[in-house]
Image (cartoon, rainbow, N blue to C red; front, side, top):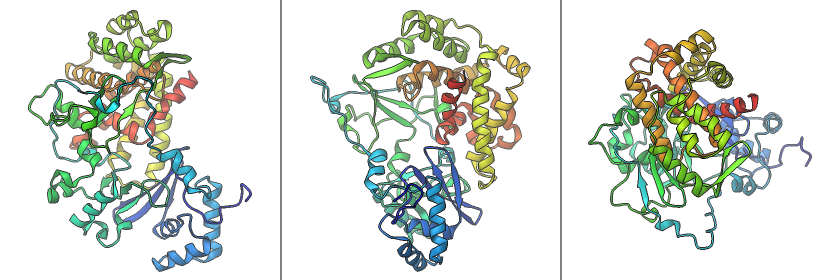
Length: 485
């Protein structure tokens, strides 16, 4: 088969995510290429044709299978459709296992000689925090994918068979997590950007009908994060929901973790526990061992944060690049230089470019009530406004309000405890990225203004920025900014 010839038995590639959206009463399926960020909108009939392409049928067989579901097409038209998808890089290789191995491997990493059994590692929970959930569904309206395993999906359909007629037709309520072949997880359809099982007032109908255990595991554990750093499993919180920041410093909420769970082996085996690499990039071209990074992170967490956390993070990034993970670098964090508008400008420009592109794409298919679409547009507008040097300078010179400062310090504390600054980016670049996010969040209320005044998700701009950047691929801007710089 030549590279220009579609597979004889086509299927959607594993790097393509198919998501069903209902905008009003109009059904749309959006294909998202996770490698390139490309979006392609399909109609209901095209999706039925594509969903029949699971890698076991040739085009004639696909046409027959789709016809049984009421989607009629002629073979030449179907061949042209799959040729177009193939040209766009959206079809997988003939061997489905090849893509599945790259995207779905969960094999445990081999233990180093003498390393303690990870199951015995203690769970170290973020201290002095408990969660007060307002039950208004902000987290159920911002993410593109809400995962259900097969048992969870079956339970949801049984409890609410009326939702999208999913009780009789599983495919009405769910699509595969990746590609089009059967896989371990499914993704629930969205109505105007909301989980289809979310009721009008923001309450989860699965919780209402079947109790908290009726919700999928990811919903029950959100916003808790788990990271194994070789010494313990850090249990922290993702600052991606207004409820998280509203809970900071407020006692009496629900614990992040059942106090009876004390070691990693006590956790539900389905919980995703990330593992810090043996060596981490701390600056471009510089690495440190996992033990060094963990020890330094603990020292930084114990340091006195400055009044302007964003300035502290930006100064810390420069210090790490100059001298590594030293006490001197932490001193630069505690007593930072003022933020330089010129240094921030390329980062803000990169974020604006990515957010503006996504906002234009979203406008073609998202509902006006879709929180994710509105949040992306607000970030694009805020970063555009901050491109004006006088406005950015005035924002940076203004004292950080006490409430905002408290929120920023908690955001950093949660990130440090959960090692959320260590990932694809070198640490120094991740610190600058976090500083930029805080600056954008400071500007966001003026952009949102009356449009989001009644939306609980807008009450905490930092959480809205964090959730939108991670949940919709905008966080890739940081690599672009670093390259441009």
